[in-house]
Image 1 (cartoon, rainbow, N blue to C red):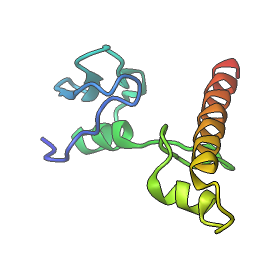
Image 2 (cartoon, rainbow, N blue to C red):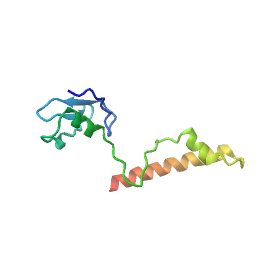
Image 3 (cartoon, one colour):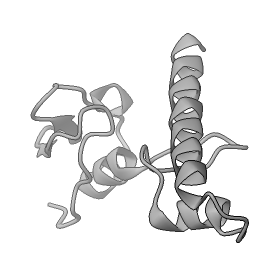
Image 4 (cartoon, rainbow, N blue to C red):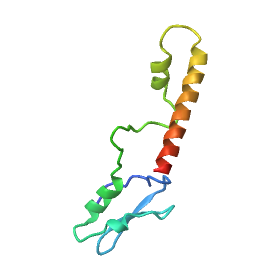
Length: 109
């Protein structure tokens, strides 16, 4: 059996469980999503965990937090031209709008 740590479910954040079977697979204990459709004769415990833990980010995209970090704010607002509070609110609102738009467009594809 593998002693690798399973990442949380990429869909709901729930806890994942390694299912013991002829061809092991991983399943979320919260939403029930699994990678059992990927079972094949080459899968062992390590392969099942590796497949579950893999996270794909499409080319041209980067993984970003839903809320901008302090470093992100500073990158936008650190221009020494005054009105920093206004720029911070504008940057935050703009960033959140971009994340929402990216989420909506990925649901349409």
